[in-house]
Amino acid sequence: MEKFRGIVFRDGPTSRRAALVSGPDVWELMLTLKSGKARGEEAVTATAELLNLTESQVRTAVRYYEAFPDEIDQRIALNTAAADPEPSHAS
Image 1: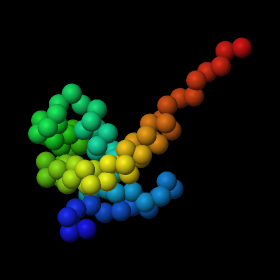
Image 2: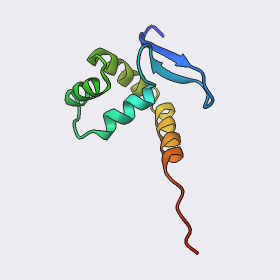
Image 3: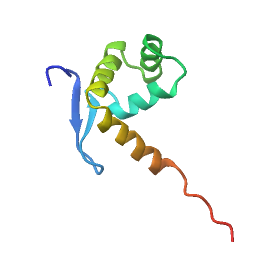
Image 4: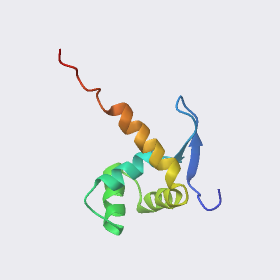
């Protein structure tokens, strides 16, 4: 965890999740970062401002994501699937 100082793991109904010590889960931060139009450092700055975090916190989450993209992308996919309303069936 030396490489990811500032990352903690939270237990919950959907299992253990990586999160910032005093911030959101990494998947939430990465979803926000990826959803914006900005890229690179502009995305880091925009995400930090939007989530009321420091740019250093955002970079920590990005480094964690770069090391474990499958874990975070799976969390994003699960959340997206759970948030999508089921299609209505007209009779």
